Length: 375
Image 1 (tube, rainbow, N blue to C red):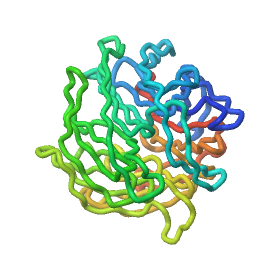
Image 2 (cartoon, one colour):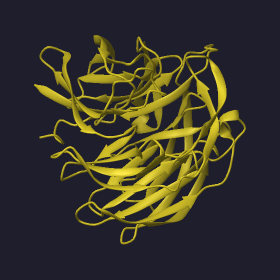
Image 3 (tube, rainbow, N blue to C red):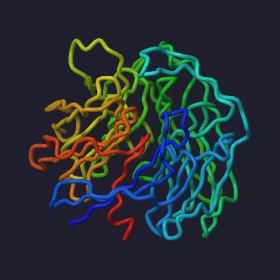
Image 4 (cartoon, helix red, strand yellow):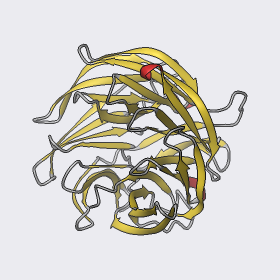
């Protein structure tokens, strides 16, 4: 069987010296051979560092830049490989405290323009949701039936936390819950937000706020579809939390949290991505710094987690990864060593073993399974 992934990342040299990436790529996994056999350019896009796929019509909603001086969001038509719609943000200056893994130091990152860090798409209602880390805001966009952006709204968020990276709210995630509400992660202010959505005009209304532990730094979520449990990835604390969502009230309640790195590890780490298997029995997390994947078994009906494996990615700064179509493989991108690593996954135990190393691909920060999407 031939499985497909879509890869995205940076196209500028300042993120990766001598970067050869031109935009969005497809990667082909031959499951019989257990290896990635081809990586091909799908669409030329400037800095598609994060994207998500439409449910229909083969459209990719992506963050992007224009002429290396303005950031925004856009829609790529897979059939043509062309950018068919885009909306760019005002050239607002952005700055934040950042960490350079190569030099092992913090620095103040000054940006002449700002780009959202996360985007999601509601295909049915033709709405985009974007999280802007740099300007501490949520962006929403209304599209017409041709995916052309017709209206947009910006919702600034205030707040901060106890750590140096938490000087501002730093919004990092905006995606819908199964009931259609929008859930948002404030990495810098240690908060989760839930909003009602007006699908006619893409406006949102706050329903509730939830405080994580100080310094947790909520970055991304894995949302169970067969229960009301949500797994919250804390980038700054290198932990994962379990919360329960009440659809009737739109509120969250805390259950437990767990460390994504070994006890006693003293190096810098920032947990980056999180995936829940379709049977909701296993949870996977990437760790930038410790350069590993953490594997959890979901227990007690979804309430709790049991760490069962920690496996190295054999590269530096693993940012994103994705399970294959049948979830018998996992493909992970090491951003700073410009390579991918493929693991074989035991679906019964959840354990990973290395299937293929040193798959060359520059500055990759987004990996998404897309076998059915590309048919």
